[in-house]
Figure 1 (cartoon, helix red, strand yellow):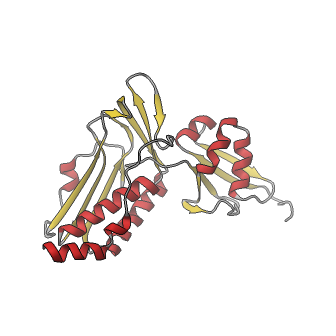
Figure 2 (spheres, rainbow over the protein chains, first blue to last red):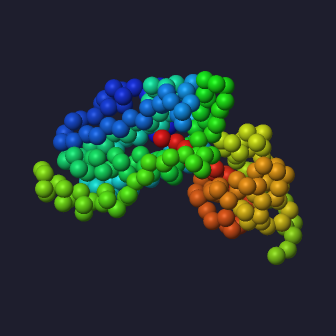
Figure 3 (spheres, one colour):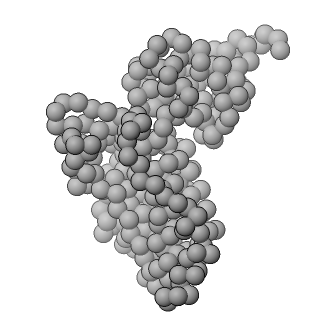
Length: 160
Length: 88
């Protein structure tokens, strides 16, 4: 299960797994108070749920082919979420940190760009807008080549 | 390409801003002749003036899998029109 309508607890999300992996990278996407100079009241997320579930399943498999991972978990919140709450949680575990960091970054970028989930932002001034509708919206860029396994291996050889 | 003798039933799903503009999350449509995703959606969007400009930015999924816009629709298909995503 990759989607939930219930609040996400980081503690619960991380619990219940054996800690044999040497590295665990937890990414939490948190609802920001300010969005494009406006104050956010809350967000509402919706998804094409069956397709989103299947795509996130497929992304975890893809990550496991790119990097030697011991465990990958993704949980994305749906419904109304307030600033400070967790919108998405990703936990990646592997023997060494380089793979876990790389896979975590890969997963959040893929989720943002390809999984059918949408958010509507509601502001304190009474206005609202659907995310993704702003051509001018600043996107954090991600160069996937930089995070290829080969590059990570070099870093790993250097530092581990 | 001839006229289909039995109309094909197709479900069309709308999300986010599209859903609000169209006023429903789901439309059940009877196709009387074969159509591609793009043909069907162009016809639908023509009825909603402010949607036509969104079409080039949308992706199509047939039964939960992304397809090319020119993909033909068959009876019983579920066509989802996906605006640019904004999850995460």
